[in-house]
Image (tube, rainbow, N blue to C red; front, side, top):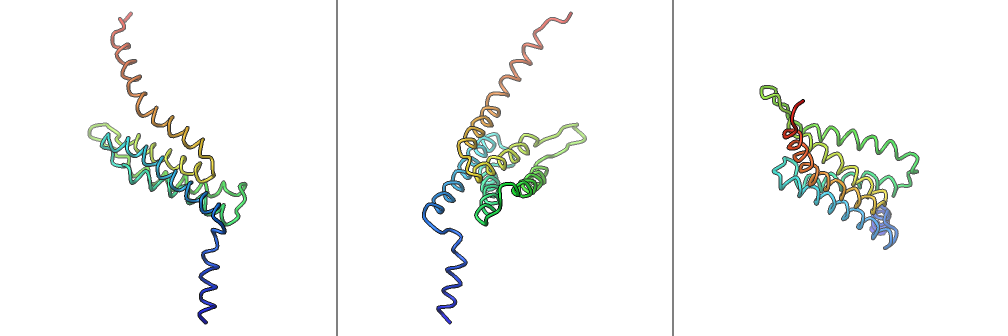
Length: 165
């Protein structure tokens, strides 16, 4: 009886057959967490409602939703259904970050929602094993968050200082 139980336990944990597979999974999940955390840190510094932990969890979750089916033998051509589910689910999560203040005619949280969405995309890319693409995407996202506000502000100042004709 104990031998049978032990055999069942070993079979249940056989989804990681060797050290190379374990290394690949750990690398992908840790990288997803790090990249999500970097984006989350930028949002947390700006007192956003979604910070480091939220972005890390979104990235790791998205990576898991890709790694799991790949580990189970799902063909890449069938992965589109998984990706559609991730995009819809994260879109629903991101929608929760958006606040509409009708009295002030303001919408808050769009950048946070977009960050959650792009963080999931980065997690998916990491889960697919496209680590360099994920790192490049994170750099581009951080550049957008850090540089674009200054460009918009500079363009606004130029527009204000232009004489009207």
